[in-house]
Image (cartoon, rainbow, N blue to C red; front, side):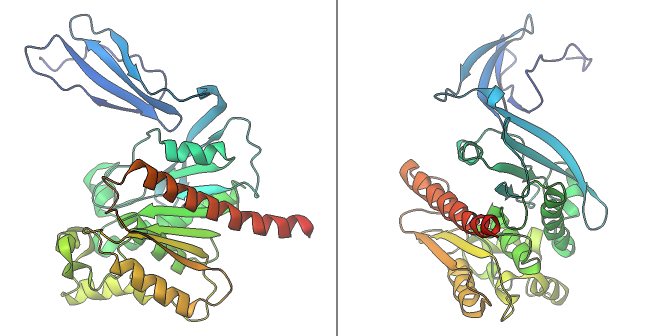
Length: 338
């Protein structure tokens, strides 16, 4: 109660710790630990002895943490800002320019993307892929300044950070432009779409999920008006010109060879209305300058993600991973034949 240091928690490794709820009358509390290769564990903390004991842990058949490794690295973005990136994969994975890479980011609304175990990401690593999660500006990882550097008139920094994350990986031969898949949802869908249009040669496959893709009309539907805090208002000239500079729907160029793209949305999404994805898919299909396919996947009985039944989530991720890996394997077959 005095605010003085008492002791450190003895954690198994670096990761994310959260919890510690309770009242003054409680003699114990609970907290959770996780990271990209550690399934969630909940510990009971005795507030008298300050000793922790394992209360619950996620069990996965055949899982062995020693089979995986994760590393936090930093790279320089376009303006030399140091950006953190978490790189995770199987411990015995042979890493080279032919290794599949899943690059994930969000970068907005002061939301921090913290290390956490995901069965979805784990399944990618089990398939022999590298998971790269980048902490873009626009998030909350380093406080308000970090957020402000990726919002409003600074939004382009977010796309630059994501592009330079891919360049960093490729320079270190963590995969290549022939094997990298970009993935993000909602504001992350905007991220994936804008970055692939600005850097069509960086990615083999792009998967913008339930994305905000028409930046001049986003505020006219459902809760879209609330996003003006991060994007600005299309009704204001300065904001309009800034939004127009990166709006995915308005920046597709005829004849450019864009990456193979799988756009996903839900017919009942009342947060980011599916019209964003419908329009973007139609225009991208019309103007695509090569044979790379542009596909639209619409889930009929789901919303923005929350509340989606488990079987539908499994079907969607199987479609995404299966499609992405099949596209990557086509290029690798050509490389090997050459």
